[in-house]
Image 1 (cartoon, helix red, strand yellow):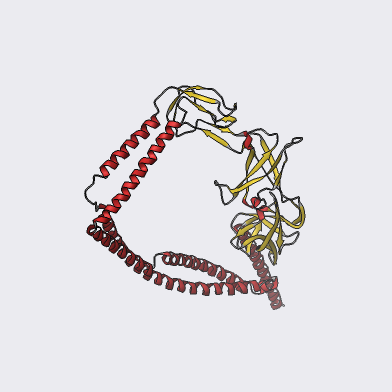
Image 2 (cartoon, rainbow, N blue to C red):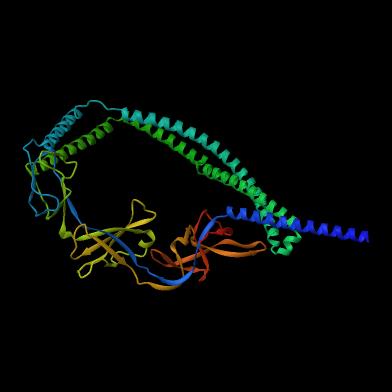
Length: 499
């Protein structure tokens, strides 16, 4: 009787310990998963939907004239009177401003330059001997180039030896990496095999050990990847350097150059006729420069802007900053005449993707003008110099009743269409081989659902400023990642942001 009671007591104790053990195990597992979840990338998602996407491109900009003309003078002046203000309309031939009487400094300077050229030519034709300075400098430079090329050849040999060593080390690291990668894949396969709660509890200790081993192997794989990438970069760097063959060719070429210069100098010393021919060429060039300077002086004498400056075309004055008493120079414009007869244009910025939907001569709708006879078309499409990789500048030619400085809003392109799979533009990513999205897949585990980011290649068939219609292995109601706290990899586990 007592023995049976003792056995029952032992069974109760063992049962209690078993219950406590499993409760503790479940609590620890829960906390470990909770900690792991907080280390995962947090992502925001949107559901794929069917709807309309407009291919219209919209932008706005201020009206400008298509052409303008700078008002300049031919030399230094002092302003006496300014006859117009910004915004005034001028006609061709109107006097814009007058100047104080002064010496024509540009003409005086040009005449001094002509005198210098003529004096230099007179000295040039009096020369009595051939100058070998340039030849000797060329030979000295060629000798130095040969010395540098020889040094470069030795460096190339050293680099080639380093390259061979680096390749061998890279190959060894590749083998280590491949072996470790195979080990990671094997461990991952074993961990994935414990996919049900029954298998997990039957092999809990083995599973935990495998997970630990998998983590360690992944860390070791990451270290090997870093070392391999560094070694590959070194190999590429060394491979990009000058080869021994190229260095030998360069040295041979420099030696040939040196021999050429030395032969040229010897020939020059032997033949006075060569010197005479060279001198004749120099003399002809000097005479041509003198004639060019004389033509310049004649043009300066013909310019009639020393007393006043006139409008060369009809238009509207803008950018006029000069006032009486100011000294102006030929280096800077005095004002701009906006040539109204040239028509109007508007420039606005769009994304590079939107620019691909447009072409020159496309008709545009002016959306903020009503009851006015205003029309517009695409005049040009060019990369935005301030951000050439992301945006483009579209210029519209505008006709009708508009004012300079007025803001116009344009719409260009096709009407909207309905599509089965539409996503926000923020969900679409791009790499060298095309566009893709990350689709969130749900994986059931004994400890709850796990969320995995799967990379899916897509084609964008229509796009507007907010959404894009896509084609690919994506269906309506799929959850697409629009934002992530960290860069994502295909198959990476993620956690959903709290909405």
